[in-house]
Length: 309
Image 1 (tube, one colour):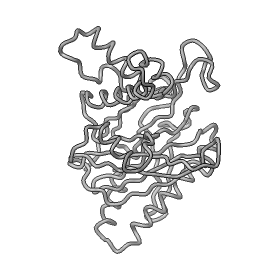
Image 2: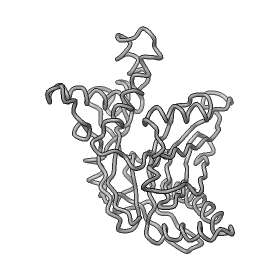
Image 3: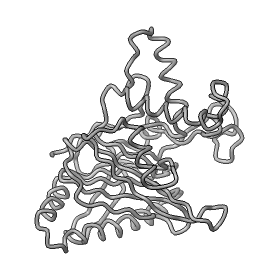
Image 4: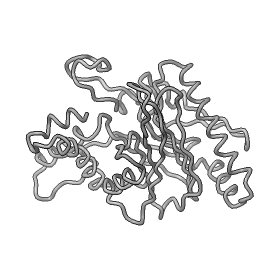
């Protein structure tokens, strides 16, 4: 995508890095002009700006940061695929504090022993958030392994809270679990659509004893038809399907809830972005289409979720 942005915007700027930054600015324009502003925003592959502090500042610019928002930024360190050198990878959950309250506890870890796949848990006074960048799931066995990995980490996170002497935090966590105030979001790399309403993503808690099933109320057929978001590749790329012509995208970017929580997921399109009053509808849609096409290799998704806060 960086190469695509460079090719697209190099005519406007002789500086290659500035051409790539235009795609960052496109993302910023989308977030600034959503008809319905986000209450919580999960991002993976957050731009590595060289340090935790610089990456946090990068996010503040992206969202027009103010005191209404809380940025939770997770960091892992992993070896690169090309060498043994270490690389820091970031993942984030940003939420509106007026809606979801204060952050009580966070935990960040790597889902993979062989690659940089960060996951972050964020417990707030009103909700529990999980954002992740999963490895590819090619079959049911790989899905079960993914569920097992996340279950083990989730039990560890819950146990750390339940074994502390802070009764208020225990009460808050138990309330979230009881009312299903849990949202899991991220890139699951689920190109086989192994997660759906029929076959949810499962997490089994030990203490308290609880079996959680996560989905977005969409069947496999509906997901394949209406929520294919991954990923843009140049023609001829080994992961592109087909190698030339219009590309067929896969599923895998999800915002999941458990129980009977109302959850309506959708791809963010031109209709979700505000118009510029000075332009007609044709010019507005042309501008909005460019913003969406030149911002990320994934399509952005949103969900309208009704929680009992």
